[in-house]
Image (cartoon, rainbow, N blue to C red; front, side):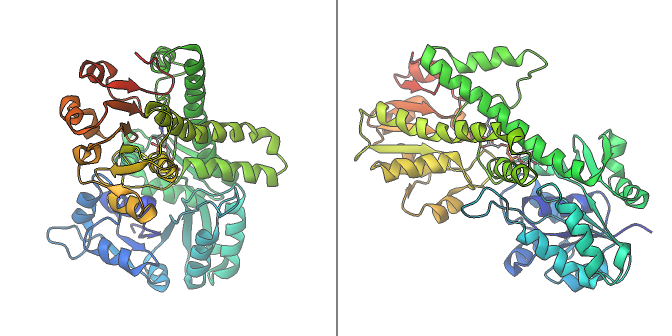
Length: 446
Ligand code: UGA
């Protein structure tokens, strides 16, 4: 019999995973504790902006015209336990306020709420990013709380999706990693992922701690690569080099590669920053703090980018931000997302505002989320509106539409033609030709 699936937590990870499993042909029940989220999803709408996700939901959510009907939603753990053979835990693990460690309360609550209803054999599969060792602890907790006892088994299956590419990454993963303690669990997971495996996605079986570590190690490596090139940007700035040309030249070495070597204002979002901090905290608990002390430097380089961008803005507008008008293009932590969690763009906008500049922000998708976090900034309906009267325009999230901006038209709107490119995706020659001063961290001034 085809196993039935539940997905607990319907954020970026869970909503996408639920829709993707329905797309792969399974009957899926998504669970969230927030009724308003469930209501939106039940109408086929994603709670966040994620390209392709609404289409996928509409193809499968039960009750919608022409849908497969394979995907439904609930707020009830009893319903989830009755429905599913496999339960994916996809809740978030944010940074604990005032600490480096991550907050495991949502994961713990999911297991504690589900387990008492598990009266028949079930596989609970953790997907959330957790400190290594959590899976072993949760497996014991599950066996203790579930009426099915040892027949309620745990596996760990980290997720590597990127926001903005969540649907594609989930349907066509570049690898599938599963931490399992039994052959039965491995067989079941191979059955669930039969389609991507047949397409060529490598399937790797590991012990639990390794599976948990693959995820945190991957995010630590990606953060390191970004901070490495941003450290080179600081050296270029001091030595008069061009970090963009440097990155390009380094990237041709196949051992280094071009990806994740884009210099700029650094990494943000709900994952990389908090994951490296939680990784350091966990290594400390395990007595291996020294092994990850370099991540402290990676974090520091990254956070310094934001300060350096504020300083570059101050210098550009004549030494003081007081009363200066600054247009900020971009609020999301990356393009094709409306996520503003720990967004470098919004953080820089906030710092400029707090230091006396009049900041107007425009983002194609993240305006509502940005306004909720920083209600005191000004917001404009278009890039051109944001630029009205500006003494400097900051390009801080590399949305496609910003690459297509007409420097001449924008030039007519501003007070002074200063463009600061925090993402190095604008063409300096084009802007300079239209009489703008183009500045970027770690690049020559002209
Ligand atoms: C990241 C990882 O890429 C995913 O593999 C992982 O599954 C996910 O975290 C997670 O842990 O859930 P995501 O947060 O969606 O995915 O974003 P990325 O595309 O990795 O970008 C992170 C930040 O780094 C962005 O602010 C981006 O602008 C910045 N970045 C990225 C750079 O500054 N330079 C680069 O070369 C690449």
